[in-house]
Image (tube, rainbow, N blue to C red; front, side):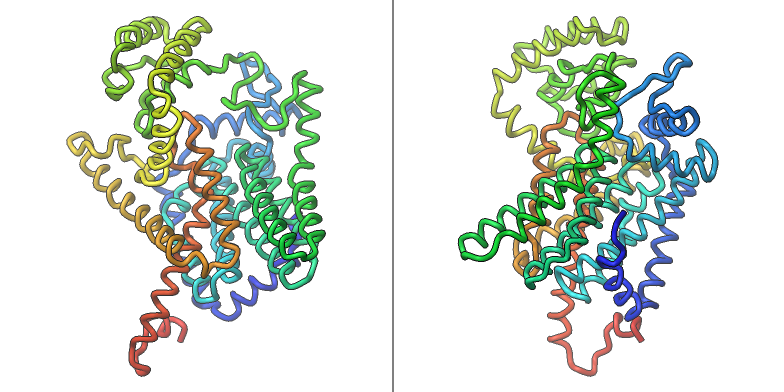
Length: 487
């Protein structure tokens, strides 16, 4: 689906020039991923839903979930990841999650190479090698390659889409129109969308970037037709695969759904809109996601786990009464959901700025800066050392490492964004995705992983710049570690 001629020659030239370097780092990256594969493999509830969809699709030709022994057609999940699982299951046996993880590890190592190529295009060849190291040895990406979830493939195809889009813009700047780049970029975005509905943010980012460049060209009285054609081509290839999915939903489920329901619910399943809106009036951190958000329905709500702002006056008594009523059955009925909606409406009226501005900003910050240990045995309340000192120590180490990646990228964006070619496309993607994440009720750190290729690219640019300054200040006879490795 992706035209190999678009960029593979550039990747191969990068490999040929520094083959021992890339081979050594790739092996280190493989060892890191095998570590997570052996000690921290992750099969979650979402994993089992995807596997159920894949198995029913493969064995019975029905895209649906198993409910009370029957297969019920579903549109709660887009078909991208179930299709991937079905292919693995067909080759290695149904339910073979270990095979899924191993294939994802290969895809994740390929992400390292594609991101190196993207960094070469936008920064320099030296920065490309640094980006390869930062990606291959990134524990957050490696951790998710050993999880039966969409993140690894989503990051892989996002990186491919960005690399192809940058290659296409570069050719347009040179007065060339290499349409295979734009068609392949659209196809990569299509895969992003079929994996997760929010993959469409990549398409929006590319579209906005092309519009900005079109506006600039128009002001300069330059030819805008190639940009218009590129935008149309990307849009067509990105959205065309959604047509059969939409038609299937209309024909089978009798309703119009081009993506997936916001709360991943089936047609006859109650979407807990009232409860979710109530949660959005106070939630800011991942610990509350584990302790409260994921507990409903099915488990009790522990009021002691709620932050003080969730139980503030004058709604405190009504909130506690509502929680007590829910805890009697652990079932979120339409009546209880309506009461949660009413409670949420009152809280929004009293604190509109907090609801629309402050809390979304705090959720975004939590997703970016929280220690990425959600797949590790560390407790969500990692700061409470009395409960799990070892897990808390791991969380602090991982948190500092995540902070280092983010701070390096931020320093580069603030001080050196002009040194990154086509930085606008990359920054638009990060800003759009972060803004979108502020609107969701469950701040999970994994949702920012799709931005990590951009984070690594800018961090690599910063480190490359610092290395260049260091070389310029050292005597000519000084031998750097990178020169020893190259030799």
